[in-house]
Image 1 (tube, rainbow, N blue to C red):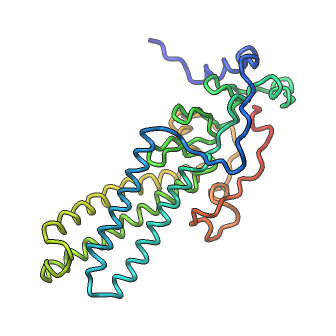
Image 2 (image 1 turned 180 degrees about the vertical axis):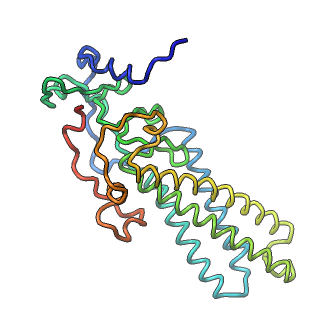
Image 3 (image 1 turned 90 degrees about the vertical axis):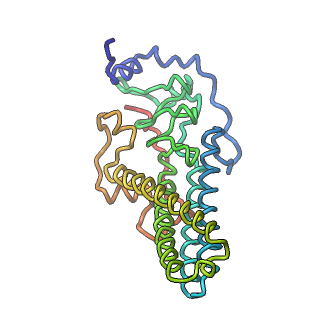
Length: 299
């Protein structure tokens, strides 16, 4: 079987008849301001629920098995504040990553009126997505789960039930960072708690029976180790993707670079906001994405 080069499909899109604007119905009217973005995908919703359950399980074990029974109140208060703050930021980042429009292209905008409004010059090219009938901006890709073209789409993550794209990549990076931090923190506390229980009487180091305590700690240890490795790798790949200004899909497809090369610091500020501030670490600070370029659809 002969393989067809990936650029062949781009060549097809260059043909005027491929656009077929008459087959595209006018785009739906935009919803009211503040309409929440949410993907109705069963697998993604289940993964998001599991994510919250695992974080809340870690909260339960840390508080009721390790910290509250401890007689060292300073140790319990400091670690309780730190762990709960990181867990809160992790869940807040998860919500922002899940409920933020990742950069969806208006659906069904490949109409004759919209194409004419671009005022294309001879030789200029626009690409149409045949799946969602939209004019694709440069570096946009179609997501089969979201059923939309997403600007600077990196990948679709079922754990946040959303695509990671231009508008929510910051929140996804923060989510992986905070999950890695609470996983590391939980593992350290489990280690100290085991040492304390070995030195003291097991019946006094926890409000649960010794077998129950051991099972709960082992499960937390397994969960923390698994998520520490997974989220650390994801955090590293995301930061590398931001610094090189190349999404995961672009790396996978080895797409030719058609955009201007910028410094790593400029790429970081484009995702997390300008200038550098504590807002970079806050899931509640929305980075300034700037105004949409009307010529982003033109090549």
